[in-house]
Length: 181
Image (tube, rainbow, N blue to C red; front, side):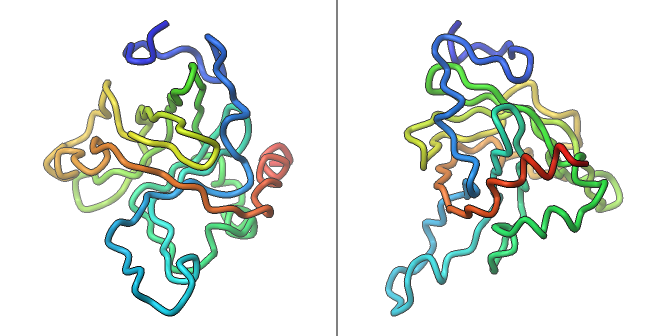
């Protein structure tokens, strides 16, 4: 199977040597912020915001909090997810790995008529460069059926991004918490 094919396998399937262990479950993958000023006296990790995090929950589930910017470390704490209560599951989607490529179908927050947001399933693909880096993470066809005008033609989501890993050992318990729900 070619990683560029549009047809998706059922969630959780890993073929052609796809290594589900190539992704980390003890933190988040965040969009790399090239606008960050490195001319600060503070450590880079102290001044960086976590933007649009991808959280790999287990070997088949993930969460993508598109357009959310965390200026604190709340996204790295399990209490943030527990506070969602029963609503937690609506943010969880699926992924699988084929060779070095991750394919995902994830609930994505998109604008609807009346300036309201709605979670809609959307397809993503990225290349796993190593356990700490995913490159070319982007929305792929078939695109969600939304008014593209209200969502800037999905331009930001369709644009390839680099995701880097931010460790949080606390989040390695997120899978256990999900199973208790």
